[in-house]
Image (cartoon, rainbow, N blue to C red; front, side, top):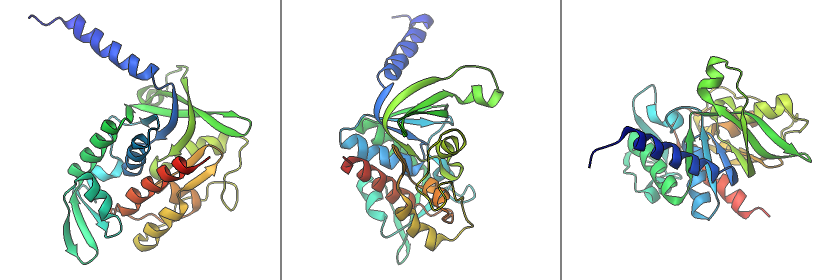
Length: 257
């Protein structure tokens, strides 16, 4: 059978817009498709939640793709190794308590399993605003990342979400919009973003889990966003805290009333 270029185009447009229409209202909108966001999405989808991941870049995986300084190996500590084991990702013990894994295998495997669990990824999409009702964030305002990058005057669209996870990493993109535009106090010491501190792997890996929580009504922080929000240090190319933080964010939402 000969291939028809218009049929190919119709198939892409039809299937994409069907997917988008089905996710204009979701249980959880995860902003940022790095390790924390992907792990959170996996566990949420496995629990039966409708989950959409909005990633501003063309690719998912955040900083995990490049390991450390583009040496595409990652390190996890023993506490996080069970998560990689659960996904079937191969690890190798380097020293007692330190395990390495291939960064590419790790990202691609976690993403694949999150999607197979039911999470849907929308890449090249930026969150430029939030929707607030009665002091609670109930939705996101989205646009194409290339539109934002080129400064085109194009109005965005909106989605509804029962909960939002800011997993955008160092930039805390959703929280910065809330801080700048919304009359909502964050659950930090000052009510504002405290900002990321200098690298300290041991401390950062511990406080990442503690900082993973609801930061304002309807919004949770996970991964490096959690430390940047609450004034914790960065941790560099050890990713156990990212994985454990994503799992904790999902558990908090699943167990919330």
